[in-house]
Image 1: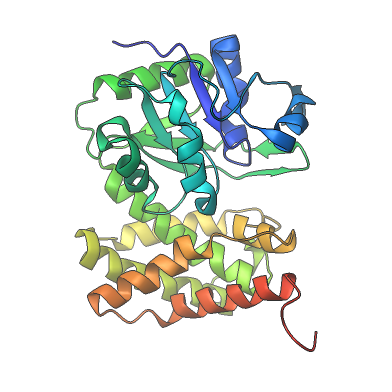
Image 2: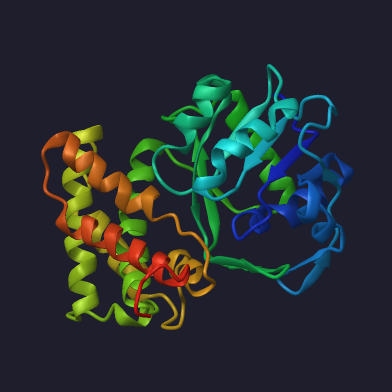
Length: 312
């Protein structure tokens, strides 16, 4: 089995902080964070993750260090294109690429640049945040699910990544069917993340029988119809009941990522979720009115934050 000895992470944000401490423990200086310019200067001062202070070795975009064994791409969706260019000198013939962005398309986009044979699928199942150099993630339930498209038998690179995560203490699951896993997580992001953002409310709004919960369930219906048409994936009643348990089990004050982005005046990933739903619905002739409302409504919130709405 191939051993991963050098890994590079681009995107030390909420998702990136999930990996960084463990990978530094496992690899030492063989683990680096990619950053340049002002971001490099900030990271050189260190970051705090779950109450501990860390300084990670930095590699700059364009720096010719030789290829890494593993590159984890943990940027926001709208920064993916630039990130894929920045990691170019880190990618060699045997590099494993692990894009951990939410949504359905990041593995495909990464494969279009570097070849699908280098890319593993991933889905993040962790509550995490990063703001002003202070990161936090759930160490009890938080984990990554990853693998090839199908994993009845683990490939050599899946075995290598699992071995590294074991050494690093990074919690993971290798899913038998990663494509289905991506759609289940996508259903959660569309139906739970977006209504909170549009309405400006935390997870506590999702009480059984509430208006917010009715929106959530209508959005799950839309995702299920699109998943069936686009990928032949059946999102079952059991899948929905599992999302119910996750949603109702959240701390009432938890605020999903899109709401956090709006509250901080940042650009959101609404196109990754609602935008994709509207596009796929149009492709297959499936009405997606709730997804369209999320898309346009959150764009209005972004315009408001940017001061582009007359009269406010």
